[in-house]
Length: 252
Image (cartoon, rainbow, N blue to C red; front, side, top):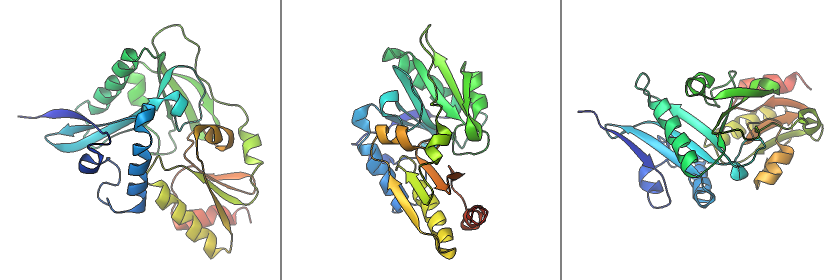
């Protein structure tokens, strides 16, 4: 008989239950950074929920109040979904996780739930499953980003900032802006640094320390990772060393 269970991570079970991503490399720097980031975020209302299929991880969702979100979006009294991923398809697990978030938002008397999607990368959740769960797209930003919302009433819409070009103008030298919200950020950083070193380009890493800094500096709505060179966005997701070198060479 199939057993489906929702497991919410907390400080007490984090080490034993573990987060979903990079779980095959629990000693890696990225995984450890993610766990430390989670420990510092639970008290801010962050939820990380895994769905278990016969005691095996089948997917997860991560969401948090907008005041503590790692996404560059403005709004009042919303929950923001950071991540949604399932590795077992055809069983409605993604919709179950989304519904769990929606019900939680209602219990917390939020105005609704926000998610940011982008069809150009798997680093953001897929748009289609949210449309199926009564989210609507209300705005777009450069580089393919889409703002979707599920509102519970006639509340003001969330919105993106408009100064994306101005943000890029701050950085002429190769700059990596990041947080540890995603365990793959460490790998992504290492690949850019390795590629830059081969081209004798020095890189600066800025570890964004809080939401205020992230809202001010991030070059995209994704928020947690951005690579800028010569006032141009190189990437907001992981690149191979070769791909990083190729994009850097285009601007030298």
